[in-house]
Image (cartoon, rainbow, N blue to C red; front, side, top):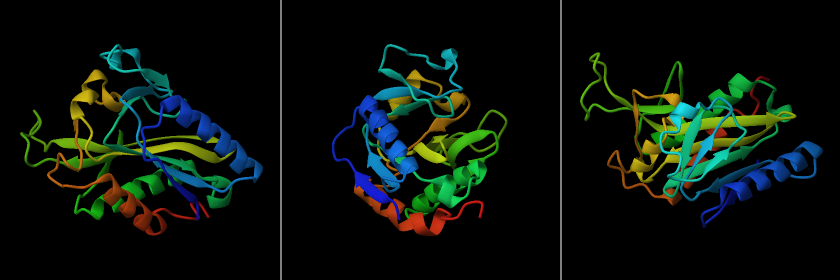
Length: 220
C-alpha cells in the first residue's frame, strides 16, 4: 500500500512540484515507498502540455504555473481536494490507458459514497455529473458539469500529478480559464450539488475506495 500523506495547510504549487520531483526520483531509485498526497493549494491556474493561450481568459487573476502534466488549463484552490498520486507502474503494469481508467474508476467510486453518479465522456477528460436541475443545452441534451479533473505525468513509469475533486471551492474562480479547453459545459462541486460534504469526508471515501476501485495490477 502507498503511504498516505495529508497536508492541513495550503501548499504553494512550487513546493508541491519540488516534493513530487524528489519523491518520484526516490521511488524510481527504490529508496522510497509509493505515496498518495492529499492537499489544497492557494488559488492558482496550471497549464498542462496541451494548454492554449486563448483558454487563459483572465491571466492576471491568479498566478499561472507550467505544470508539466498532460492536459490543458485547470484551476486549483481552497475547497478543492488535490490528490497527487506517486505510484510505480513498473509494479502495477505499464499501461497508461488502464492507469487513467483506474484513476477515473477511483473518483467515481469515491463520489458514489455520497450517492453522486460520476460519469466519463468520450472526448472530455475528467469526471462529469448530469444536471437535470439546470436548463438543457441548446441541442436539447441534458446539461453536464465537471466535478473532477485528471492530469498525470510519468517518469520512468512512476506517476505524479493526479486528480482534483471539487468539494466546496469558489466556482467563480474557474471563470478565468476555459477548464480543460471545454467551453460548452460548466463545473460543479459536492456542495454545489446540495451535499454538505467535508474534505475529511472525501478523504475517508478516497481511502476506502482505493483498494476496491483502483486496480493494483493494471495491465497484468
